Image (cartoon, rainbow, N blue to C red; front, side):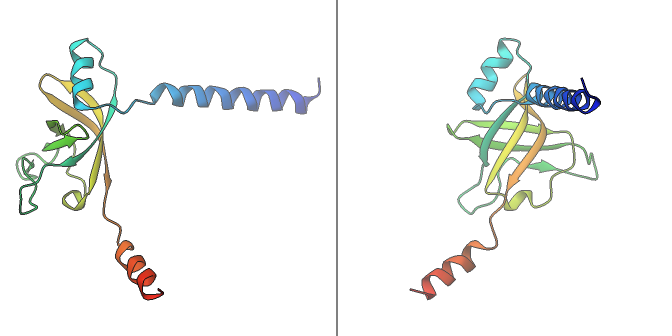
Length: 141
Protein backbone atom coordinates (compact mmCIF):
# COMPACT_ATOMS: atom_id res chain seq x y z
CA UNK A 1 0.00 0.00 0.00
CA UNK A 2 1.06 3.52 -0.64
CA UNK A 3 1.67 5.95 2.19
CA UNK A 4 -1.24 8.11 1.01
CA UNK A 5 -3.62 5.13 1.30
CA UNK A 6 -2.43 4.40 4.84
CA UNK A 7 -2.81 8.06 5.82
CA UNK A 8 -6.30 8.12 4.29
CA UNK A 9 -7.33 5.02 6.24
CA UNK A 10 -5.99 6.54 9.47
CA UNK A 11 -7.93 9.77 8.86
CA UNK A 12 -11.14 7.82 8.24
CA UNK A 13 -10.55 5.72 11.38
CA UNK A 14 -9.98 8.87 13.44
CA UNK A 15 -13.19 10.39 12.08
CA UNK A 16 -15.14 7.26 13.02
CA UNK A 17 -13.72 7.34 16.56
CA UNK A 18 -14.67 11.02 16.96
CA UNK A 19 -18.20 10.42 15.68
CA UNK A 20 -18.71 7.40 17.94
CA UNK A 21 -17.50 9.27 21.02
CA UNK A 22 -19.82 12.22 20.35
CA UNK A 23 -22.80 9.88 19.89
CA UNK A 24 -22.11 8.43 23.33
CA UNK A 25 -22.56 11.91 24.88
CA UNK A 26 -25.88 12.55 23.17
CA UNK A 27 -28.90 12.44 25.41
CA UNK A 28 -32.58 12.18 24.62
CA UNK A 29 -35.41 14.69 24.95
CA UNK A 30 -37.90 13.63 27.63
CA UNK A 31 -40.60 15.11 29.84
CA UNK A 32 -40.22 15.54 33.60
CA UNK A 33 -42.41 12.46 34.12
CA UNK A 34 -40.00 10.28 32.17
CA UNK A 35 -36.98 11.89 33.88
CA UNK A 36 -38.53 11.00 37.26
CA UNK A 37 -39.19 7.42 36.11
CA UNK A 38 -35.60 7.06 34.91
CA UNK A 39 -34.20 8.29 38.24
CA UNK A 40 -36.46 5.91 40.18
CA UNK A 41 -35.13 3.05 38.03
CA UNK A 42 -31.57 4.11 38.89
CA UNK A 43 -30.82 5.50 35.43
CA UNK A 44 -28.70 8.62 35.99
CA UNK A 45 -27.99 9.40 32.34
CA UNK A 46 -28.30 13.01 31.23
CA UNK A 47 -31.51 14.00 29.46
CA UNK A 48 -32.86 17.13 27.79
CA UNK A 49 -36.15 18.67 28.94
CA UNK A 50 -37.87 21.44 26.97
CA UNK A 51 -40.17 23.83 28.75
CA UNK A 52 -41.26 27.33 29.56
CA UNK A 53 -40.76 29.39 32.70
CA UNK A 54 -43.67 29.49 35.11
CA UNK A 55 -45.14 33.01 35.09
CA UNK A 56 -47.94 34.77 36.94
CA UNK A 57 -50.79 36.56 35.08
CA UNK A 58 -48.72 39.78 34.98
CA UNK A 59 -45.88 37.94 33.21
CA UNK A 60 -43.47 37.82 36.15
CA UNK A 61 -41.43 34.65 36.65
CA UNK A 62 -42.63 32.54 39.59
CA UNK A 63 -40.28 30.36 41.66
CA UNK A 64 -36.98 31.90 40.54
CA UNK A 65 -34.34 32.27 43.25
CA UNK A 66 -30.88 33.72 42.65
CA UNK A 67 -28.87 35.75 45.15
CA UNK A 68 -25.30 36.27 43.91
CA UNK A 69 -24.27 37.82 47.24
CA UNK A 70 -25.18 34.66 49.17
CA UNK A 71 -24.10 32.05 46.58
CA UNK A 72 -23.32 33.11 43.00
CA UNK A 73 -23.30 29.47 41.87
CA UNK A 74 -26.78 28.49 43.04
CA UNK A 75 -29.78 29.29 40.85
CA UNK A 76 -33.23 27.72 41.10
CA UNK A 77 -36.37 28.17 39.04
CA UNK A 78 -39.59 26.40 38.14
CA UNK A 79 -39.93 25.00 34.63
CA UNK A 80 -43.15 23.77 33.00
CA UNK A 81 -42.52 21.05 30.41
CA UNK A 82 -44.51 20.34 27.26
CA UNK A 83 -46.92 18.13 29.26
CA UNK A 84 -47.55 21.07 31.65
CA UNK A 85 -45.75 19.35 34.51
CA UNK A 86 -44.03 21.83 36.84
CA UNK A 87 -40.63 20.94 38.27
CA UNK A 88 -38.12 22.75 40.47
CA UNK A 89 -34.74 23.03 38.67
CA UNK A 90 -31.39 23.66 40.38
CA UNK A 91 -28.44 25.00 38.41
CA UNK A 92 -25.06 25.14 40.19
CA UNK A 93 -23.74 28.01 38.09
CA UNK A 94 -24.55 31.70 37.75
CA UNK A 95 -27.92 32.68 36.27
CA UNK A 96 -27.67 32.95 32.47
CA UNK A 97 -27.85 36.42 30.99
CA UNK A 98 -31.30 37.38 29.61
CA UNK A 99 -32.89 34.44 31.42
CA UNK A 100 -36.02 36.49 32.16
CA UNK A 101 -36.52 37.25 28.45
CA UNK A 102 -36.45 33.65 27.27
CA UNK A 103 -39.46 32.17 25.51
CA UNK A 104 -38.37 28.58 25.83
CA UNK A 105 -35.75 26.82 27.93
CA UNK A 106 -33.90 23.57 27.25
CA UNK A 107 -32.15 22.05 30.25
CA UNK A 108 -29.71 19.15 30.29
CA UNK A 109 -29.23 17.12 33.44
CA UNK A 110 -31.02 14.52 35.56
CA UNK A 111 -33.39 14.10 38.48
CA UNK A 112 -31.81 13.90 41.93
CA UNK A 113 -34.28 13.28 44.77
CA UNK A 114 -37.19 15.65 44.08
CA UNK A 115 -35.40 18.29 41.96
CA UNK A 116 -33.96 18.34 38.47
CA UNK A 117 -30.25 19.24 38.59
CA UNK A 118 -29.29 21.00 35.36
CA UNK A 119 -25.78 20.93 33.93
CA UNK A 120 -26.60 23.18 30.96
CA UNK A 121 -29.29 25.73 30.20
CA UNK A 122 -30.06 26.75 26.63
CA UNK A 123 -32.35 29.75 26.12
CA UNK A 124 -34.54 30.61 23.19
CA UNK A 125 -35.01 34.35 23.40
CA UNK A 126 -37.48 36.36 21.32
CA UNK A 127 -36.04 37.49 18.03
CA UNK A 128 -35.49 41.17 17.54
CA UNK A 129 -36.16 40.76 13.83
CA UNK A 130 -39.68 39.29 13.92
CA UNK A 131 -41.54 42.59 14.27
CA UNK A 132 -39.49 44.25 11.49
CA UNK A 133 -40.11 41.33 9.12
CA UNK A 134 -43.86 41.48 9.81
CA UNK A 135 -43.94 45.24 9.19
CA UNK A 136 -41.98 44.89 5.95
CA UNK A 137 -44.20 42.07 4.69
CA UNK A 138 -47.42 43.92 5.45
CA UNK A 139 -46.10 47.17 3.96
CA UNK A 140 -45.36 45.49 0.63
CA UNK A 141 -48.90 44.09 0.28
